[in-house]
Length: 308
Image (cartoon, rainbow, N blue to C red; front, side):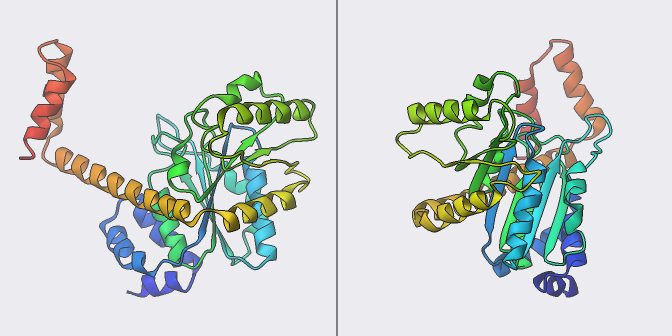
């Protein structure tokens, strides 16, 4: 297949075509991924997550520049929230990275969440596999930035950056379980703003109380708009990468595979259920629940029973 050869050669149009097929659930995309999977070259997947307005896109843009200086091919998945009404998205993250658009060593793909929770689009893991097949050794995944439950990125990334900024309301909100537990490296961006020192002290105190058993993650201060502190951040990333326990690294890779496998099973089961159920039949189940003649659990069992 010519498309596979073009992807393995790292041609941008072929990579874009493959990801579009996977995003749209095209059977050709599935067959493509079957054949590409054994050809993947293992890259470093770096997750960038945090609250809206924390400067994730600007920081990602600076990281792209640093790795391109080393001539490392970079793939980026920038996930944006989609409208609950139209399904569309602004895909504004790409605008902040426009200066890399003519660099053939950088591929930036914007994705809409399309209703997926946890800050990621469904096809993100598949896009990572395509990037690895295309020989991109640094893969950046920037999540939506929707809040404290944005933890799905830990299933995909080898290293997770959690980006915090001073002055965004009550700092205690930032220190809740979930997003704070997934960080391998904390980044305090906009470190020139008032309250940055206070945020750093509070963060380190909180980590000292809650993560003694796992060791404390590094905390790096940056001003991404000016590129300040980004070299220290890349050094922290490389240090973490080089000193990581190989067993833990392997466990993360297996976690990505298990997530993709479970997601594929779930998707196929759902397709089978909907494929054997007309709109009228589905509405009949809804109607019985609405009239309190039944409940969602009983009706779900009845629908699933048809699979047998």
